[in-house]
Image (tube, rainbow over all chains, first blue to last red; front, side, top):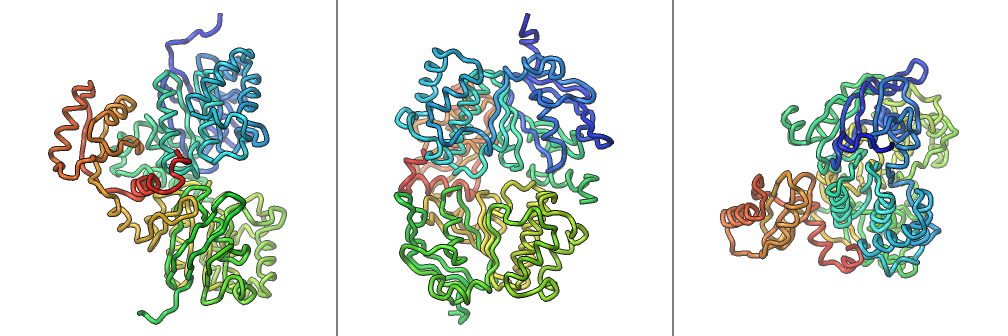
Length: 253
Length: 318
């Protein structure tokens, strides 16, 4: 009796709220993300992004409202949610003093794959990335761009319904960056929902839709094109700065 | 010949770490009161170059002078004239804002009072938090404190290593506005960034990749280095579009740029009208009906990718 809402949205959030004492970090946010969509989740430092994501991945209980991820309620079924998501961040991802293959085995084990699955999916991963020659190299010795691609693929090892990416291409050279986005598009085309947070508005341009959070609320939501038309500018950066400068937090900072 | 000596003069600068070529024969000069950008990905050599220019590291070969002083022989005379903001948060988190500033002033044998006029435009924005621990500041405020600490001894040249990495878009924009004001006051500034879109804020930029300079010019001039006409192609069917463009017989390059694909044609003689019409037809026959094609000027990132492809080490990156 699992997987109830296979045809519903991958992420459905309604009036989601989180308070810390009297401070409202996330204030009644509502949005949906479709299966296979690449969704950009933007906001200034302190706008409430991290709190919202912690609720979506089942690490923090909401104060009010509800959120379903991969069809499961983040409040009542956080274990089911965590089993169906992947997570990759530029800062925290792989173990540098383990080899490529050891990292694959470690994460495969954590995600509950069998030894056979770890072997077959690991080999497939190495072939897809053309990493066979580097399988026994320490991750710490790989160039940054390789680590990023590997970290993404490892986060996809258990075939999650939704993968969360935190500033995925920061500092990477522009060729590797494009290879990385092609990996993301490939995953999205196979039905994985991709949820990207970033400070860099040019990363947001790669997303199907973006939301911009200000003071715990969603201040703008739409395709990059629609937002540019709505704000009469050709730059997402301008929209972001305009919204964030109106923020109450900014006025006191 | 203008008669003014360059603020930075670098000739044949080389530094290796074991097999890694961090810098490979770098030549460049920076003029006084110039805002000069080093643009490139992690591992490009930006930090190594800063460490050599700030006398913290000795090059294997080549020479560098800053303010006319040799970075190896004249390090003690040089150190008091330069300000350096390293890439990682370099302040003492357990000290207050004011204590950090006092500490950095005292290292250079000066005081906050003596340096106040220099740091005032920046420091006054955070001065009311002067008793707060540095670790408890927001990202934007930490950055302003770090900049104040790098300026408190009134340096003649400022080196900033990735000051805007990890900082949100509002703080980033304010920071670049501050750099513009500092430059207007006569300060020479060398700043690095991995973000190509920030390069436009500099007077001149050097594109740095795998220890080499791919290009060096004013940001607007860099786009002209792209060797072929460039087109922006859009469709809602992103992956099919990319595949169709790569399958087109005359494709020189087809790369995703946000919500468009940048396409360049291998035929130098084909007119833009021809290319637009042929591409439109080819995409329609591939089942992509909503594609739009238009000629665009090349940007810094287009040029960077093009030049990276020719550079040694391109294979390694790909």
